[in-house]
Length: 561
Ligand SMILES: Nc1nc2c(c(=O)[nH]1)N[C@H]1C(S)=C(S)[C@@H](COP(=O)(O)OP(=O)(O)OC[C@H]3O[C@@H](n4cnc5c(=O)[nH]c(N)nc54)[C@H](O)[C@@H]3O)O[C@H]1N2
Ligand SMILES: Nc1nc2c(c(=O)[nH]1)N[C@H]1C(S)=C(S)[C@@H](COP(=O)(O)OP(=O)(O)OC[C@H]3O[C@@H](n4cnc5c(=O)[nH]c(N)nc54)[C@H](O)[C@@H]3O)O[C@H]1N2
Ligand SMILES: [Mo]
Image (cartoon, rainbow, N blue to C red; front, top):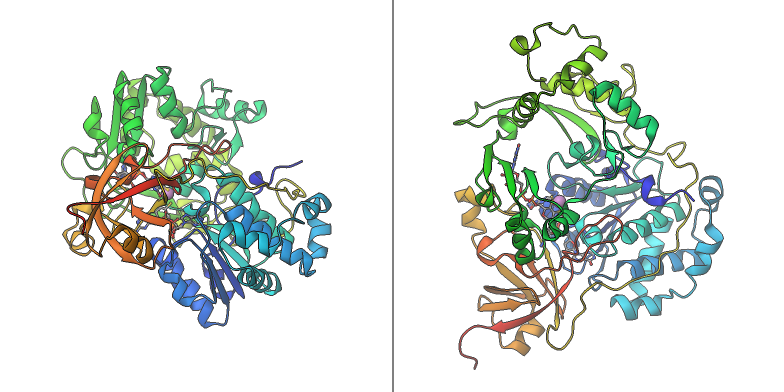
C-alpha cells in the first residue's frame, strides 16, 4: 500500500495561493492565518466576499473566525475524532465522490467501515463541538463544487501530527477535492524559505528533490555529480539529535539559522543536551541564545544582503537580489559553506560544474574556489528534474512553480491533476490517540503555544524592532473568563504557570479567545519562555514535538482576596 503521507511528502501546498479566491468552501484547521500568513488570509477573506463558505476549526477564537460561517472550537488534540466524524457524516449522507474514489483511490471499503462508530454524538463528546455543527461542516465541505483545506501547526505539532495530516488527506480524497483547481490539501509553510530548504534535501532521509538516499540508483547519480561517497543510512531529525546529544553519541553540532535553545520544547532538557556537546558552531545573523553557547560563531548575511532563490509555500521559486551591503565581517551562507568545504579540501563544486558543461579553470584555486548562487541552482536542476526547466534568466521575469522539468514548461499551479506519484493512494483508517500529557488535578489546564502577529518565533529578529516592541512588548497567557473567575484572576494580573518541566511568570489576558480549560501562551519571549513548559514528546513518524498540548497549573501572584 502506497503511503498517503508520501502523496504530500514535499510539505508544499498542492494548490496555489491565487486559487484560494476561486474556492467555494474553505476548511481552515489549526492555522491562525490572519496573524501568521496575513497575505494568504487576505485571499481567504476575498473568497468569502466572492461567496465561498469558510469553516474554521481551532480551539481558539482566532481573528479569521469573524469571517467564518462556522467555527468548530474543538479541544486541542482531538482533530482525528473531529475529522473522522465529519467523514462519517459525509458517507452516511452519501456525499462522497464515488467516481473519484473508484478511479483514483484504493481501500475505501475498509475505511468506510471503520468510520461507522464516529457518530456526531460521539464526536461531540470527545471534541466538545456540537453535533449539529459537525454535520453542517460535513455538508458545507462535501457539497461545495471546489473545497480547499488549509492547515498549519495546530495540525502538525502533536504526537499524532502525521495521523492528523493523513486524516486531512482522507477527507480530500473522499470528496475528490484534490487534483483540481481551487481545491487541495494546503499546508501553509512557516519560515520564508523552509520550502526551499526541504526541496534542497534538508531532511535526513532525502537528497534534493525528495529523492531517497536509501535508493542505490539515486545515490549513484548524486555521487557521480558531487564526486564523493554518500551515506546510505538515514540521519537524525533535529528533535532526535537532542536525545543523541544527551546520550553522548552526537558530540559536534553545526546550527545554521535556528535558535533551538529557545525554540525547542522543554528548554531545560534541550540546554542539558547542548552542554554535553564537545563542539558547537552557530551561524546566524544575530547573537542568539544558542550562539551564546557556541564555541564558534559565524556571522551570516540576511536575506536582503545576498543573491539567490527562495521557494514559497506554493512551490514558487523566486529570485532575491542583494539590496544592502553586508555589515561588519558577516558573509552570506553560501560563501561561508563554500569556504569551509574548500578548506576541507573538497572541490566537488568543479566536478558538478564540469558535468554541467562549464569550462573549469585549470588553476581553480586562484580563479574560483566557491560556487556562485547561480551555479548552485544549476547544479540542483541537474540532479532534480522538478526545477530543471528553471534558469536565472527565466526567474528574472517572475517566479515559477515546480514541477518545471523543461525550458518551455510554464510551471505547475496545482499538483495531481492526472495522477498521484504513488499511483492510486489508499485510504487509511486512523484510530484517534490521546496527547502525550493529559490534564489531571495537579495540572488541570491544557496549554497550547504559538504565535502572534507582531513577533517572530524566538524574537531574535523582531524583538530588535522598537515599533514591534511598542505594540507587543510582553509575554501573556490567554485564559477564559470562567477559569479566571475560579482562580480569582483579573485581566492584566501577574500569574505563574507551571508544568512538570518548569515555571514562568507573565500576565493574564482574560477573555473568550480560548474556551474553559484551555490556555494559550506565545513562545516569543525569553523572559517567560513558553518552551520551559512544553513537552518534548515526539510524533513517532515525523518526529515533530508536541508543542500544541501539555498540562499546566496556574497560580495567582501576590495576596489572594
Ligand atoms: N507573525 C508571525 N508569523 C509567522 C510566524 C511567527 O512567528 N510570527 N512563524 C511562521 C512559522 S515558521 C510557522 S510554522 C507558521 C505557523 O502558523 P500557525 O500554525 O497558524 O501558528 P500557531 O500560532 O503555531 O498555531 C496555529 C493555530 O493552531 C491552533 N491550535 C492549537 N492546538 C490545536 C489543535 O489541537 N488542533 C487544531 N486544529 N488547532 C490547534 C492555535 O489556536 C492556533 O490558532 O507561522 C509563520 N508565520
Ligand atoms: N512552544 C513552541 N515552540 C515552537 C513552535 C510552537 O508553535 N510552539 N513552533 C516551532 C516552529 S514551527 C518553528 S519553525 C520553530 C522556529 O524556531 P527557530 O527557527 O529556532 O526560530 P527563529 O527565531 O526563527 O530562528 C531563526 C534564526 O535564523 C536567523 N537567520 C535569519 N536569516 C538568516 C540567514 O539568512 N542566515 C542565517 N544563517 N541565519 C538567519 C535568525 O536571526 C534567527 O536567530 O519554532 C518551533 N518551536
Ligand atoms: Mo515553522
